Amino acid sequence: MIHPVILSGGSGTRLWPMSRALYPKQLLSLHGRGSLLQQTVRRVAERARFGPPLLVANEEHRFIIAEQLREIAVAPRALLLEPVGRNTAPAACVAALSLAETEPDALMLLMPSDHTVGDVEAFAGAIERAATAAQAGALVSFGIAPQRAETGYGYIRRGSELDAAEGVFAVADFVEKPGPEQAQAYVVSGEHSWNSGIFLFPARVYLDELERLHPAMVAACRQALATAQRDSDFIRLGREAFSACAGDSIDYAVMERTRRAAVVPVSMGWSDVGSWDALWEMSPKDPSGNSIEGNVVAEETRNCYLRSEAGLVAAIGIEDLVVVKTADAVMVAPRNRTQEVKRLVARLVKDCREEADALPTVHRPWGTFTPLHNGQRVQVKHIMVKPGGKLSLQMHHHRAEHWVVVQGTAKIRRGAEEMMLSEDQSAYIPIGTAHRLENPGKIPLHLIEVQSGSYLGEDDIVRLEDSYGRS
Image 1 (cartoon, rainbow, N blue to C red):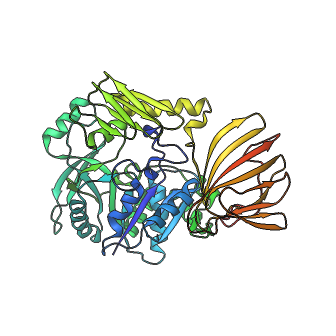
Image 2: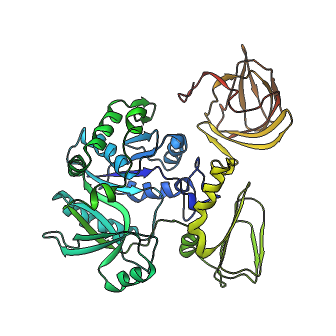
């Protein structure tokens, strides 16, 4: 049995404006069926060799991830929540410690949640080859056959083939992101592979090597797991202990310093979807070389990536550009400079722009809300509550609310009163009145909320009771 460990802590800043801190790229449907996270889970969930996936994720994304797993009918072994990001080495450490509690020699297949694999059968074959070496104590990485002289990836130079592990090689050298000439030499040599960031190793061996090289990191992770809080379907790692843990990648912390490193070269249609240009490379194109998604009209346009998530994008006479439009932002860049989009995001963060963090539609465990209007003493939102969803029992000190049901059935508690509303009916919630909104039906509940008052911020919510542990 191989235990998939899926890391979902990244922010995907180079795919802004679709990828945001509160809704990063692994949660988006960018290429193929479902989100990148769902595709990663499906890659192993449908094969008997694999156990239920263990996920290590950002605490902010917990309800979205849980909902996406529910959508594909996958029950995780555990969902470990990081209070802060500490890179891949500590994330793998807490996963290994969790697995080792019941199975010390468990084989871990460590996968980022935001990569794509076009040839799943080649991926499965590579795992079988790697498993033979991992069972013998190797820490196995997966090296991707390079398609071009890529300067954005690290490289692995392979050494001699391991005994009794056909297709698995000792690692001769890990190489950082090279310059163009060096990258071209690596491709020509035939000895180098792209470093995919996917690993297979025994939990015990990884912990032993990490203990030898970074004992303080292992101690902090043990303490974070020991002080973790179990909350519904989640395990919240101890904040104090995990925050004190040093951050580092698996490559730097272990793989570049261990004698147990091995590599399986494989060609499996892999991409880390690291930029809009990478997405253009892997997407279907029209006869002019354009990749088009959504409501787009293009004339005399060549080799562009054009995407609209809201409204029309119209282009004429442009070449080699990326244009991405969301409901609140438009990003335009030359295709060969899309790796630099993270500089834009850094600028937005510095300027405290809300577009850096959240999409206009905000996700909650019960559903979503989308602001429609924000004016003087008034705010209008579109609220969607999933079947069975229930907002917290709450009150506001500074605002009143008026709810109009557009579709579905609403169960409303207002003070000591309970009522059921259907389409075109409405309810008024006075300032200071305890209230709760619930969807008892089998279809999504849609309503318009009009807020009025002296202060309309989201922090004017006093939660009296909550089904999701937020009160």
